Image (tube, rainbow, N blue to C red; front, top):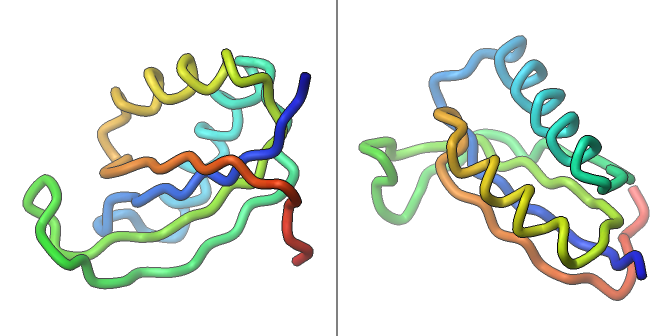
Length: 100
C-alpha cells in the first residue's frame, strides 16, 4: 500500500547551485530506484542551524514529497546516510501532499 511522505533534508552549505541540482537529482534517483515516486521537490534555501552539524553552521533545506511503501523508507534512509553532502534527514508520514 503506497503512503505519502515528506522527506526534509539538510544539505552541505558548501554546494553551489549546480552542486545542489546534481545532488538532488542523485537523491531522486535513489528514491526512484528503491520503488518510491517523487511527487514534488522544493528548495527552502540556505539557513543557519541551531547547533553545528559535521562542523557546519548553515545548510540548504530541501523537501521531497513522495509516495512509497513503508518498507522502502529504511532502504532509502540507509543509502542517504552514506552521502557526504547530506547532513541530516527527517522522514514524516503525511495524510496529503500539499499543493505547490
